[in-house]
Image (cartoon, rainbow, N blue to C red; front, side, top):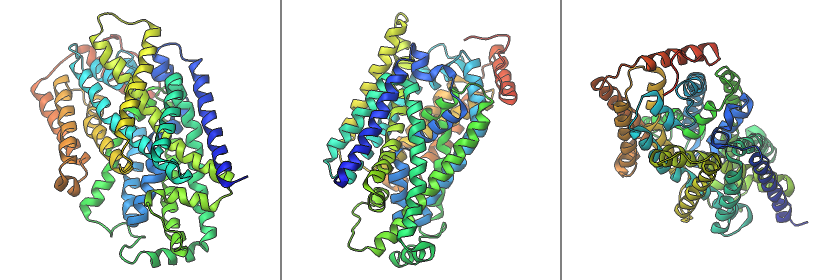
Length: 505
């Protein structure tokens, strides 16, 4: 059997399993709560693997190894910042957000939580938040679809646009029907595949590059201008801060935060954190090791020219393993891409239906109509993102960086202030959110600024300052809000949701 046939067989089997899970989830989705939040019934292990898989995407297996292949361990500041940010997110945000979203009107989306928490009867805050989600998630989904096109181009020599359409089509199908349940349980399978592949490739690679000492010598021989093993050379202090600042983004990523909201109870956040951070450390270490082993491997085989550094993990897997095993390793790359895209499509759909359509609807649609609208939202966002991804020269890391910064700067400070600062007001939240989003858009599109500092840093800082100042200038004392805030604090502490005497919005 030819090599490509083995690999295609593994790929088709993987896609069939994903579609099967989507169908299984379809039969268990009865209303919009199920479609968007799985009825708040996620076990901590499922939530942790789902959060990790939906978080990392093709960036973990394509973008990060490519950056390290070129710039060495200095580029690892991104991974370090992300790991610290993820731990802080699980430790402090997860239990409190799980409790507060149920206490404050049983909100099933982040914009709805902001509206309920801050008593915004005008729906302005919810609409602004919904628009921010649609704008930046369209770029984020586009990044995943670009990664899919690059994947098929590199792995099978197919035309970029064919690979793009295959990835977009299969992902949309299982997300369209399975909703949040389908996206979450496919994430569990995909997360397991991802970490297994990231551990296997560098270990097997070391056996082919002569062991640790020989690999280190080859890396140094290949890197005459960059110290591949230094965290502190290869860039400026500002560049290191910018890279580590990726960790700030975690507090504002809706597709990750929604996993916290779907936990069975605040207490589950502890187990979720342990599982999730273990998965993350293994994954980022595997990605970093794959890049370094790749440098040694291609230095030892100069006849094998690596055209695109973002393909180093793909090239290694195809050269190190039997075609069938390589096919499943390649499927893990596809899993990373599809898991993120599906999660982002669900959140985008929720923004369209729950946070924008319902605001303007004259009457509440039926349960069936709401689910159909949710599926329609998935399709609309997927089509727009596919159009944006049509350019094969789009950089995966650049697209992800822009969207990550957008959410981190627009939502991150508002999430933290809403959870931990009683005096935040709707005026402060709206002003801060707009300030953060606009700063990212402007800063990220001015070359001199973006080359000096990652746009999430000024966006995050400006959001906090504007939100606090505007809240101080527009105080809003509300007894029910005070009671909910106290109940959320106590619920996060005890691990079980305790509703206040006055509930409802």
